[in-house]
Image (cartoon, rainbow, N blue to C red; front, side):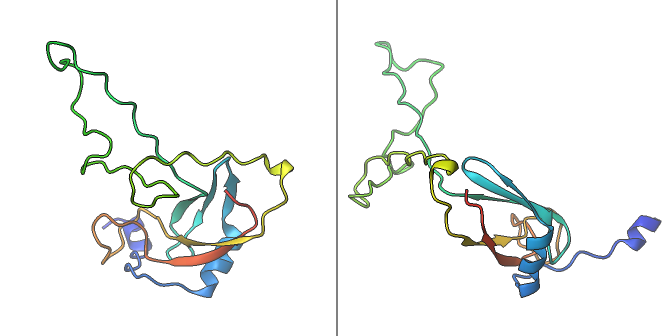
Length: 158
């Protein structure tokens, strides 16, 4: 066993836990980067101390790919991949806001006015959780983090 392995503490076991101190520590130590539609928080997890990056977004939308061109008179083109049609069971269509569950498409959200042109938003509270990539014992396969979570008041909004 090398000296580095002997000096490194064993990773904490995965546990979905919170503590008031987590939010206080994150509020003091995390860096905040603002983008047009997101706020990125970075720092050491208050529980396991491993580095994390947590992205908060205001809205997410997806635009479907344009429909495939109609097949040539001799059949489908050799280089056209098979894709399910929009609205098939493999790819259901989104509901419209005025007709939930009715099929149709949802228009992308309106682009907000620049921050200078609007009144500042009231602070909001967001839940943040550890997203470290260190292997914590007892963590389910496919999961990330140590299980810690906390709530932060944000004075900036994505």
